[in-house]
Image: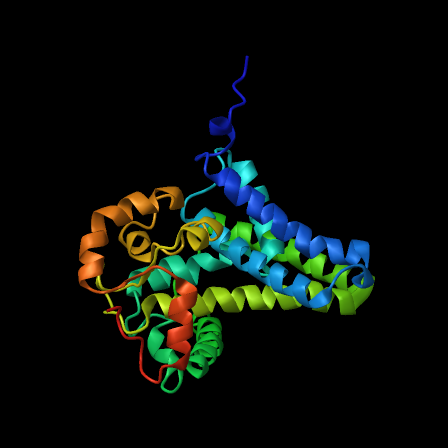
Length: 285
């Protein structure tokens, strides 16, 4: 009798949470055109959808570092689901994140280095960073010397691109206004959050250092929802470590991280202080 346990389906049991959160993101994007815009409160729905798209982006990040499923065909199918949840190809993250950011780690050749935020009040720096980093990634990845996807990953990216194009075309033909409001806008906001949080994690840190190169946010609720994305030092130390194991790895580094004053209990509290500061983020006191 064939074993049908979660271990035969998923590499890690914790990824049932990943699937649940991605499922909610799918529902948030699909339901508005099904129910009709008059059946749902637009503002709150878009806000929740954007947050769920952000979480789907984090799930995609984790999935690209370590495949979620045991079987390749299921991972390829999940690539397509994640593509539709984020509005960009799932495999498209590999070049700017794996092959650039993790290699250059906020140095001068990192396409999303914190220096792109410039100077001024934190809110302005954050907005500037989201725009500048997004544009810089588009420019740099087209450079002849930029890293390239492996052939299998490039083939997957092209399949994802075709499915996304078909989804966008169908959405626009069905009702372009609903699609722009309840799909494109949450996609854009979710990606903006993903790019913006990178500044919070690395601003005023030391490029190239394992401990000292990232800022950590250890709040339980935020890390539960965002799949332990707050344990950023541990992730940079061991990118292939599954997200569910990052708190344990963080615990082995916590004393050194706290000595560097780079551990915070809440990303929202940090963001509020960051937003009103006119200097690169001070370390915790």
